[in-house]
Image 1 (tube, rainbow, N blue to C red):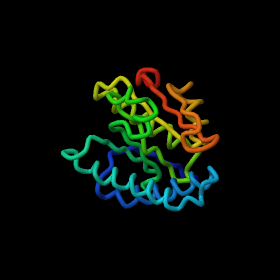
Image 2 (image 1 turned 180 degrees about the horizontal axis):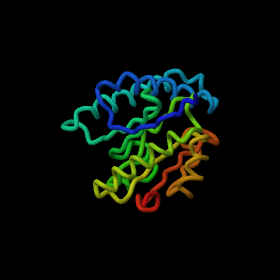
Image 3 (image 1 turned 30 degrees about the horizontal axis):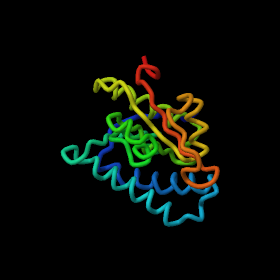
Image 4 (image 1 turned 90 degrees about the vertical axis):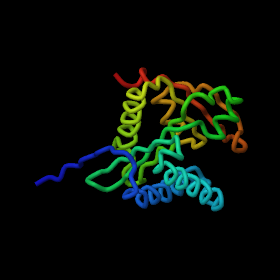
Length: 184
């Protein structure tokens, strides 16, 4: 008998928060490592802690305007995505031009589950949610070269590229997209 994988998307709940924090730990550490930045331990920890805090705060919608979706593969949490106000990197890279456009962020998938469509399903699920909310645009950004390659394929040319933002040959890219371009 063959076991089929079942992927389900749902809103982040208190019951899932520890698993989401583990995703941040493993995915962010893996991303830094694969970018050749594994030695930046303080930066890795800060990124993990910032994402954990964002997720924890989102559990109380009266104090947060960030919404998280999670992906569960066979009941195990394997990925996250969020939508909320633009972060500092987008604000500084665009000179605050996109401050009124929400950001698709915190797209992380466990390294062992990457390349299986989890991230694509999370994006599609979030864009469906945005459409239902009447939101017609979103932006996203990345300084990770591996993610930039994926986003170039999926979202096309960036709205803005800031050369050497993270240091020599480490650009930061920002995309501005229409929801209707990516879902029916």
